[in-house]
Length: 188
Image (cartoon, rainbow, N blue to C red; front, top):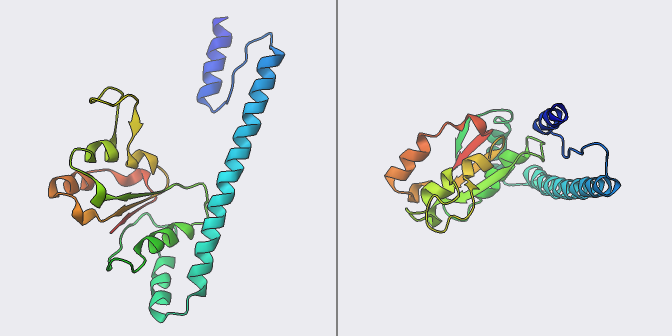
């Protein structure tokens, strides 16, 4: 009845993957279990790949012989656990993205998202949609709702590459964002 439905809604809000009504249909139960098994396998695969990537970055950090890079990595270590916005400066090809990934990798949390956005590739007409997302039918061709890069990086790190190539208007939009949901904002 209504009470059971209310309990099901409450359970889903608290993170339940499925809600099966009584009497339980064995086929529905079997399908739910198979879906959970597949989701678990996918989660483990994603986690394994993230951990492997993090491990590679850690090896790179600690195996470099360049005094300049050792100094950079010493600075990176000071950022551990910080919510600071980090500005990464340097010429093209010096490894700014590797530095951004190294900052993220040292947190030892493979579940944290790392989002990268090349701001230089954005057109003025796409900026709002990419940064802030949009709702279905918000404009011609928007057939589904789409989260923006800020929402996708919730709880993780956001690397905005070539931010200086955005117009001043669009740079000011980014500076007006509350980044409290990001662990770190990395700017180039």
